[in-house]
Length: 68
Image (cartoon, rainbow, N blue to C red; front, top):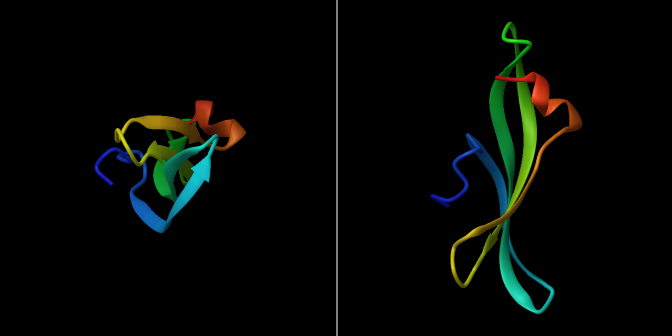
């Protein structure tokens, strides 16, 4: 869970298997400011390798590049 630092509130943690490898799928929310002004909550999904603990992927909303 320490690898999933982009998530400020964890909703679910699931142990799954993708491509013959066990992974943790962490879904949660992160607080950010849209255009540096408007506070928003982003839904984030992070996939972490169960064997090595390395972050495999981070899935954010398409508009996340507009946030701080």
